[in-house]
Length: 239
Image 1 (cartoon, rainbow, N blue to C red):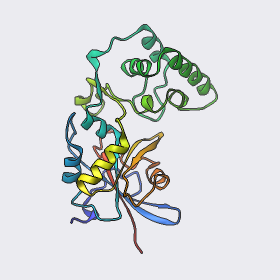
Image 2 (image 1 turned 180 degrees about the horizontal axis):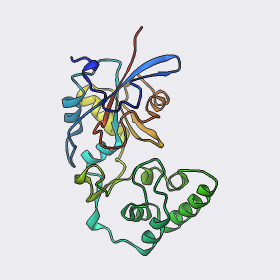
Image 3 (image 1 turned 45 degrees about the vertical axis):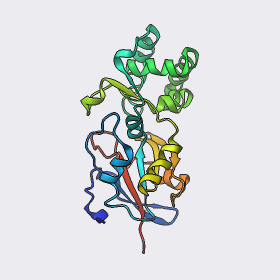
Image 4 (image 1 turned 30 degrees about the vertical axis):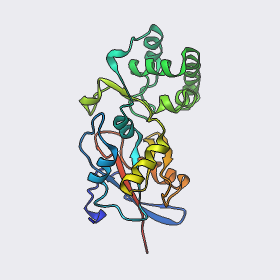
C-alpha cells in the first residue's frame, strides 16, 4: 500500500486538510489519464485508487466519469438545434460558476429535450429575473439535476469531449454499490463544481455518510478544469 503523501497536490488552491464537525480530513485528488467512453469503472478504481486505499477511506467519483463508463452520452451530430435553443442560449449567463453552461446551444437543446419547452422557458425567465436580484443558479434549480449535471459539447481542456454531451449517470446507487462489491473500495458518486454540488450516491458499507461527504466536497477539491482528477480519496486524520 502506498502512502497518500505520494499523491501530488494537483489542486493546490484547495486545502488538503479540511476540518468538519471538529475533525480533520485529508482530501487527496488522484490524477488519471483522460478517461474515454466505455471504460470499466472498477478497473479504473483498481488502477488508480487501490494502491492508496485503506479501510475507513471513502473515495469521491465524479458523476461524469460514471456516465462515460456507462456510455450515458448524446452525440452532437444527433441533435437538431431548434430556434428556441438558439434564442435562449444567447441570453444565458456565461459566468455562473459551474463551467460551460446552457449558453452553449447544444446544452440548451438537450435541456429542452430533457425537460420540455415550457419548463425551460420558465427557467430562463426566472433566471433573468434572478440575475437582476443578484441571484445565481436559478435556471438549474428549476431545470433540475439532469440539466445541472450535463457536461461535454466543448473543448476548452479536453478535445475528446467536444463531440458529445455527457448526461447524468443512470442509477448511481447501484453504480456505487457495484464498485464497492467488485473492488472493496468505499465510494460516493457526486456532481461537484465550483458553484456547489450534490452527493448522488454512497456505497452501502461506506464509513462516511452523505451529509459529511457533502461538507468535505463542497469547495470542489478535485477542481473543475484540466486537473484530470476524477477521484478524490478522503480519510480522517488520526491524532
